[in-house]
Image (cartoon, rainbow, N blue to C red):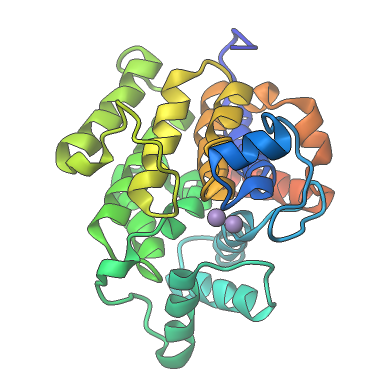
Length: 300
Ligand code: MN
Ligand code: MN
């Protein structure tokens, strides 16, 4: 823990969103590698260096951050929650030939482009982490109202991902983030976050993350286990992110989700300056604008 003073709402919100982007940029370098491949190539990955299978510039982000920015832009443009506008923004993003896009996201957006439907039918193959990785702007918009939060979180998910495990994971993180943002803890902050994780595991045993099964794939169960394990086993933003991405696998996305949670918990002041400096400047400015816009939108 680098700052003992409780961060302000803006510092927590900015920490979550910049943390997401920093985790994406950091983890993308080792996406699809195994932990031992990472050890051979990097020792321990501790810096944003670009490269990876996408051959990124250092500080470049991928679909995780880009879909989040598109969601945030859609909320701000509409001045509120307009799911059709969100789907339009995502489809425009897909048509811009992004550097990467998940299969379920692509399929869902193509379906929307064909028939205009805003909900994908249930599919057993939709239990990827795509709905969770991009959910943050919906949380920043709706975190003060639990019913609105649940509705927004699930609606944005179902445009592309319609699966109970994806829903459960996305709602769990939304509730953790909402508590962190609101700052109204009914008990010790970490204990409260553990309660949310416990409730998720109680409802769906496959999310058990202790002992950690050491799978970090894009399957939402593996992703959530990796992030929750790393978050509760560490005590700083930096150590949480380093722990997370060095498991490899879907490392940009586990990094993004860990960055969102740890950023909201520790605040923007805990994100290492060397990582923030590396982050694509346009992305950083867009995030700063969106955080202020989304917090203002709900009259915070
Ligand atoms: Mn990605
Ligand atoms: Mn990914």
